[in-house]
Image 1 (cartoon, rainbow, N blue to C red):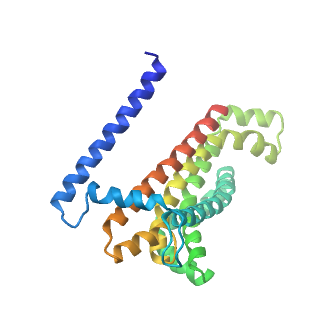
Image 2 (spheres, helix red, strand yellow):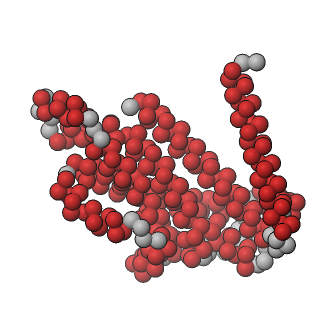
Image 3 (spheres, rainbow, N blue to C red):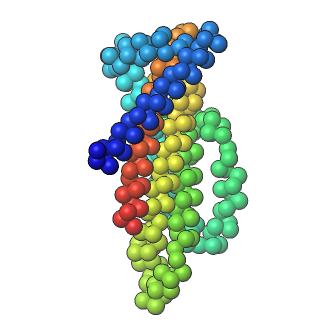
Length: 259
C-alpha cells in the first residue's frame, strides 16, 4: 500500500471516527435533555433544507442557500474592508516607533470591545442593518491581520536592514522589497484568523439586525420552536467555517512556501 494512500485512508478513518463520536455525544445529550433534538430528528430536517436551498417565498421565508449567500457576502465585505485598513496600518506601525507609541494605547482599548457593542454605533451612523453588520465585522475582524502584519514588519532580520542601508534603499523600496515580502506569511495567517472572527460575528450581528442571513434564520427558527432547524443551521455554519478556514490555510501555506 502506497504511503500517500495510507495517509488519505488514515485521514478518512479519523474523520469518520470523529463524526461517530460527535453523533454519539449528541444522541446522549438529546436523551438527557428532552428539548434537544437528536440526530434522528435533526438530520431529516437538514436534508430537507438542503434539497431546495434557494426557494424564495417572501421576506421572511427564504431557503438556507439564500440566507447563507447573504451572510457570506456581508462577511467578505466586512473582512475585505478590515484588510484594507489592517495591512497598511500594521505596516505603518511596524515602521514607526513613534506612531506605535502614540497609537498602541488606543489599540489596546479598542481591541477587547465586544463586537455587538459596535452594532448600535454602526446602526446610528449608517442607518442600515446590513451595512451596520458589515461595519461590525470590519472593525472587529481587522485586529488579527493588523497585529500579524505589525509583527511581520518588526521581525525583519537585522541583516536585511543592514543590506538596505548599504544599498541606500528609500523607504518605499524597503517596504516593497523587504518588509512586505517578509511579512506575507504573517499577513496570510492574520487573514485566516480575521476570517474566523468575521464568521463568528456574523451570526450574532444578524440576530440583532434581523431580516435576512444565517443568524436571522437561527433566531427565527428558535422563535418558531423549530430546534431541528436551529441545529441544522449550526451544522451548516460549522461546515462553511471549516471550508473557509481550510481555504485560507492553504493560501497561508502557499505564501509561506513562496516566501
